Image 1 (cartoon, rainbow, N blue to C red):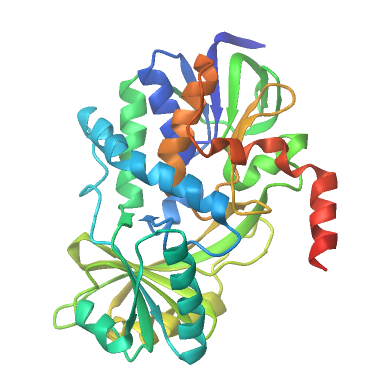
Image 2: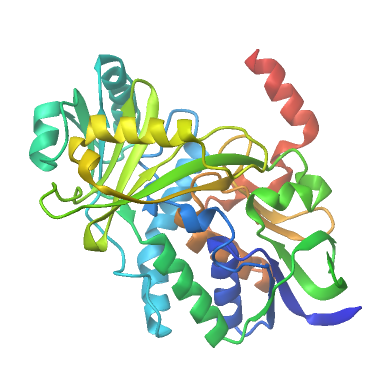
Length: 381
């Protein structure tokens, strides 16, 4: 048995695992990360990079909104600390905000509900006509109405992951290119045998439910396909802001990248652990994107890919100790990048025995026991 009982194991090297590993190593912990493909193997690599708790909000998801806003407040310091390590998240944070577009009357009514909900919570979000929205983003098509959300940010997810990986290595984090098969208490079982640690953090995303019995059925994979495109000479440039839209009930987002790049996503559906990109998924994304931003039809299509979000029952992650002492940092749904700072800070607090960040108590892993999930399902019928 490999004995690293004075150290911390982090299972998973997506944005959550890398953020935890880097911050823990910076605090003096001896950290080992177990993942066969650090940075590139999970949903973080194919994400859009939106840091948008307000634009993502919906009635009934108040706990997710509060946690997202807490993490958003931590993002500028998180990015500054990363830059201070000699690495940086691409071109840094974009503070240009988000616009949300409604394609037809039914979509506009849904957007109006969201605007009233956010206004009632005291969040800044302005409902505007389609004409007003097109003044903000001239490349938009004939959308019916829109929402201006100035406080949202976005970041280049792949540059961020590479920066976190480099920063973790600079801090002495050991990377073991093995997958975890199971874990409990102070032990992680891998292909080469068991390894012991003083503490274990489970940050394996959609696979977390297969690694710990307490999360079985609580964390599930949600497939999401995305496209990467690039503007060509003579085409309309990408939007300056993140554009989120609802096209006949189907959500779509367009996130600009430097050099004329554009990320379009994302489908979301139950498909187990399948990461095949389907023709239907590509067609739906391109159709929705073109109806919202017509110029995209002339862009170069440079990549199609799919990832698995770590879904939870209520869109809130699972943060905190499990029954055997393993720390859960998983189930972040569609907000892994957004919630990386608050999750890393929560792990540091657990290890130090101090109070974790505000909002994390609503994410405790035992909030949705199997009995509670059954009861919730019966109430929804």
